[in-house]
Amino acid sequence: MSSAIPLNVGIARSAGANAAGAAKRVLLAEPRGYCAGVDRAVETVERALDKHGAPIYVRKEIVHNRHVVETLRDRGVVFVDETEEVPEGAVVVFSAHGVSPMVHEAAAARGLHTIDATCPLVTKVHQEAKRFARDDFDILLIGHEGHEEVEGTAGEAPDHVQLVDGPDAVDGVTVRDEDKVIWLSQTTLSVDETMETVQRLRQRFPKLQDPPSDDICYATQNRQIAVKAMAPECDLVIVVGSRNSSNSKRLVEVALNAGAGASHLVDFAREVDPAWFEGVRTVGVTSGASVPEILVRGVLDLLAEHGYADVQPVTTANETLVFSLPRELRAARQ
Image (tube, rainbow, N blue to C red; front, side, top):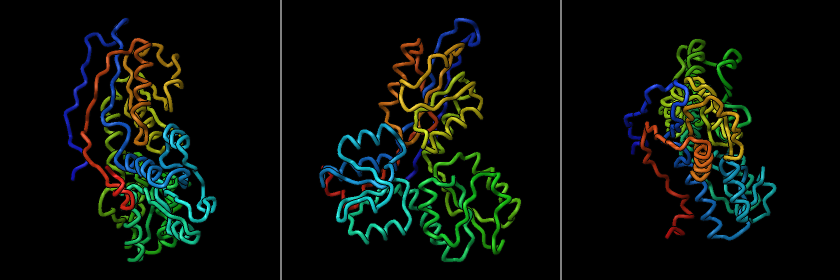
């Protein structure tokens, strides 16, 4: 099933847009916010709480968003860094970013009841890594060092995976056989930066193979496309998202590269600095794939208080993809 239906983008341009006293407006990116994988992961934890009661343990943050984590913590979720911190026999949920086989093994050794909330699109990349490792390929994994998703994917085939953290890291890459090299990527990267890295890799390794299907998440791409469509019209783009959210940080970069006058990342409306509005007529608003809509609404309310009450949607896709819950929780659905 297609995850997005392309739509026409219509951005109304007011006459005399640059004239003093021109009407203030907001361009609101669509799609934005929760993707199918995040929606599934958050609901997984909520269903686990309903089924098993508190406390429920979650390894790492279920998704990279402060509001979501704090809300779940208030409901009795205990977030831990490693499975060793979970009491033997307890319920632990693995985050949307995925984990390595070693984490699964460690959980089994402690008799933990595991529920895997890994995004199916991340699982796809894991399967690709295992497949190409079996065929003895060198796997060049484009991603950010230390990111949980990268650690989980690399853990599937540590002897075959080599991390490439951006275009500047390409010169340090070595391979055993230039005829058997493939690239994979972290799902939440900037499309443009990833392709720049691939281009640099292909200059060094002309026979570099592409993954069987696009690794960068459809939602990541859709949110970046929407920002690119509106950024040239924006004096300021506000991205709602957390600082440990890779895809949210990329939206700021995409906005600036696409022509926005300025762009800032905020978790909550209270972090918006009114000084940013000086001389600003058009404000773009979007949010990362792990951001609930209530946080965007808070920013829109604040903007309205400062005279930006005219909100124009900028729609570049209509997302329809939905992922099923983990099997052990499906029976709990009403």
